[in-house]
Length: 207
Image (cartoon, rainbow, N blue to C red; front, side):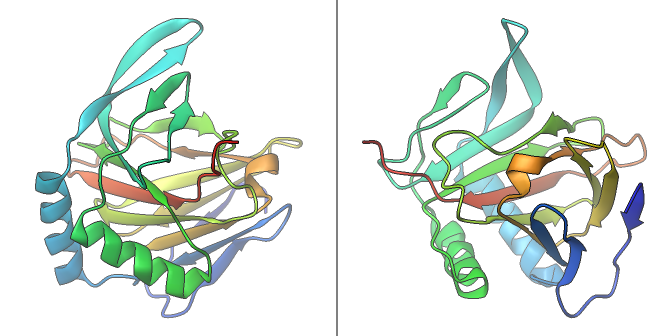
């Protein structure tokens, strides 16, 4: 699996791309082209998008990438030291959520959306292992727009695996992937179109 790259253009069935220390499944036709175009436009106009703010080495950094945090009212979420207050679910997001719940067999109460304007914007190595997340529920990630490359890197031996995320694709990251792997959305100078990524999660209730 060392430096393995998956370029899956025609996969009618889910493909398993990680099997060690968790499992990742990829399906590139979760939504058709016309549906993707319609969803992209509606999400872009119906949500309040904000530049992301993260704390790096004690400094507050504002990113070019924009985010929207949508969830049930009680779902407060903190990552990189910044607490997110949820927006209300839109009809489009509820339809996507219900479809994902049917496919995965798990319930979701939140969605973090990232808007990448071009390939100059990416995401560094990280794991989605914040304390609020239910570690027993897989994270379901839907891609709309530009084709982008996602890489996985094992925390112990640094082996890597990559996959191209197509417009309309679905990536399911099953536990305990976040404990053992990091992932990164790689930057690309040749990508000029925008991309919206939706990651559906389950937030644990506060005790």
